[in-house]
Length: 140
Image (tube, rainbow, N blue to C red):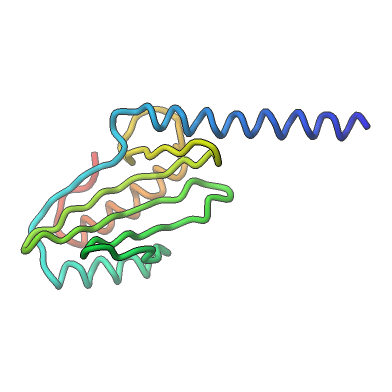
């Protein structure tokens, strides 16, 4: 009976902790890293190849905007790259989504602090490889 009680207490504390992290991520003033640079169909093909090589899968295509996602939200927060072509320019948004089941919050990869640090560092390394391949400066 004691084991069941402590398991329930641990589950409630863990659930509250995850929602607190999502609340803190939601309260940040920097929900994503935005980049805009010249590019065309060649850059989009290179982004598709990078996504396949780094485990990102295309989640959605809406009005030309592509959303790539890595992660299932089981052990780490999902990592996102949104790509939106505007004629001969490409705009990207990079972020990590903290999902507390009740609350959700997006957090920039270059954000400061320990919140979702491991997925942010992993995503930043992958996105920096992409930007280097495209001849763009890396994230700060």
